[in-house]
Amino acid sequence: MKKTGYLYDDRFLLHDTGPYHPETPDRLIAINMGLERENLLPLLVPIKAVFPDMKWIERVHDPDYIQRFESMCCTGMTCFDYEDNQMCGQTFEIAKLAVGGILEAVRLVMEGQIDNAFCAVRPPGHHAEPGQAMGFCYFNNIAVAAVYLREQWGLKRIGIMDFDVHHGNGTQKIFENDPSVFYYSIHEHPSFAFPGTGRHFEKGSGDGLGYTRNYPVLPGQGDKEYLEILQNDFLPLFNEFAPEFVLVSAGFDAHVDDDMSDICVTTEGFNTIMQSIVEIANRHSGGRIVSILEGGYSLRRLPELAANHVSILLK
Image (tube, rainbow, N blue to C red):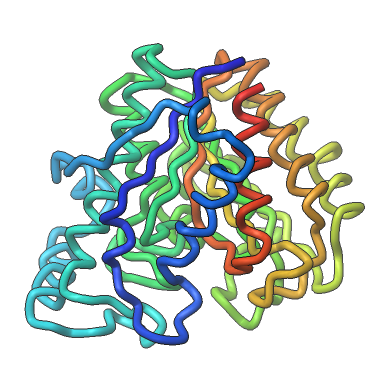
């Protein structure tokens, strides 16, 4: 059994998005419930969130954006940039904690104290662009982790697999010119017209051309189509890239019972996705994976999906 870290902190629940918002603290409560119900918590190495050195966030986000985000939280604004980015006075600090906890998870993996980790964090991050909050996301958690791996640990090939049902426009934008980060995304398109990016022809630019890969799937598709994509596209590309570390944008909103999409992936389908990612990591990066929560809004399904996800990391 592998040593799997689990990043969770009660302070993540303090990010208040108001009534009726899908990105609710109940999501993390449901995930914890699933891990507890399957007796997984005693098997995990707890990781507590810490505040990061701001230089890592500043490597991804514009200084004026960071200042604007902090200022709007301090002055009591309840939304940021777009109406769906609901927040409270503590959101800026909680967003920093999420980043800091993820960097701590990465550090523990790189030092060999744990083999891999699952980070149950709020707010999510993959839609956040350098100067703009989008899609419930404020700081791009996974992008900061990739920059940290590259600059603090000297890694030259970092793979990001994003299976959230919405395209990670922010992550793509941050790394589209960067050949050291391979960004791969499977997502619904069109998906409620959000975010409207991630088409087949978006493959990066400049030195990063070819290191972005998007695989949009049509509404109504599910396990069969995802399995074909994994076998025929994702696995060959990542085997060729041979990542030294694998980061995962783990969004569970492509599930057939999740109202945030029209994709029909089953629980077994999600297991197959994660098993494919672990296969890549075991082959090329010594099993080094840090998986970071993005979407997933079915409170009925999140407990089992998270429990299965963690169980696969433990094997």
